[in-house]
Image (cartoon, rainbow, N blue to C red; front, side, top):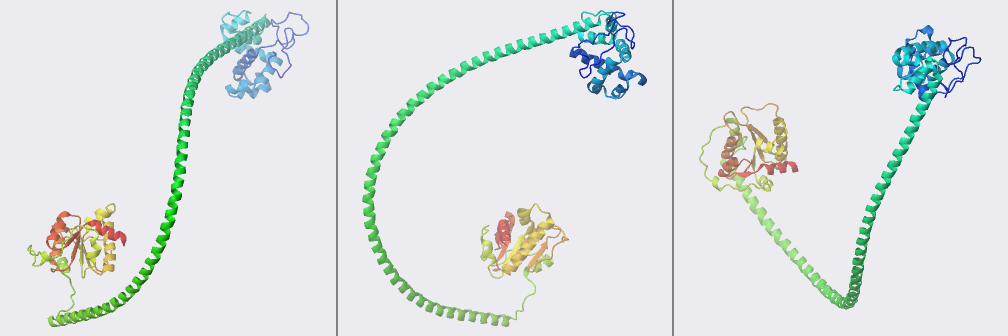
Length: 467
């Protein structure tokens, strides 16, 4: 094929006015011979060689159309400038000669051999044809034709090899398909045998099911007969029940009338009992007022726990008389509300024992604030005296305002909150209900010996959660 497909121009032959005599035509010949048809690999190699030497040519030796192409990147120069390069090689013999001089210098021995009209047998025919086209030594057309024949032979060999490879692949696939078909046929035969066996089993099961169906239908007929009989009996029983229900309703009406009479009698009797109870309580109240006036007892401003909080005085270790009679109880959370409902009850709380069990993820300041706030709600609801005791050598700073009815105490240096709690319990008079909330076994045993009611921390935490 021509060097460039878009152009029909041809390079001038030997004897033309634009170039020196070359080996491609006889001297004195008339019109130049037409350009030979170049194989596509040869044409691409000529463009690549030319594009590689363009940047090395002086700007004044470059044709105007190629000056912009010479500035392209190497990987774009041959690809984008191929049409222009081919056209200039065909139309400008002087430019071709300049390019040829640089290409032959880069080709070395192979270029020298091509200029002499010979080519090594081991040389690439495409490279030889490209150099021959540019240098155009004597016999260059034969070199190009030989290169084309070699390229076509290689292409034919490649096609034949590809056809052979495809045939071998098809043969391999056919053999594989036959093997797969044999395996599938074996599987299908095994599947057919299995299906036949299952079909025989299904037929046997069908016969058994039909026999069972006939038996079931016979039992169903007998059951329907029995059902009809039972329905008759049920109808008779329903009639008897309705009659009995009417009689029972009549007796119920009589009983309700008698109960109304009894309620009226009980109401009258209760009125008499209420009058007697009111008279008794009034007598007791007047007696208590007279006793308080006789003893000249004024209302107290301080409670026993206040004296413990102020003085931290040591009390005798001997159990006061009568404390053995004070109520004892186990750690039952359900008892907290009942104990707080007792008159003038005193609730003593082991502060950190409760807070670390209920909300230990908070800081100590947040624990104290949350507990004191919750105890304020209990004091407001029950009206009871509430004391919460924390471990601490001195009074902590940053405490929230103490709610009404709640006393906050800190153990002093050298004393624990457990010891302070036992002091508070011993300071109370015998007979007053004192409730101590702590999950510490030692604290519970100590206050129980002094007649207090020990309860676990969970009972108070549940009570606070309910508030």
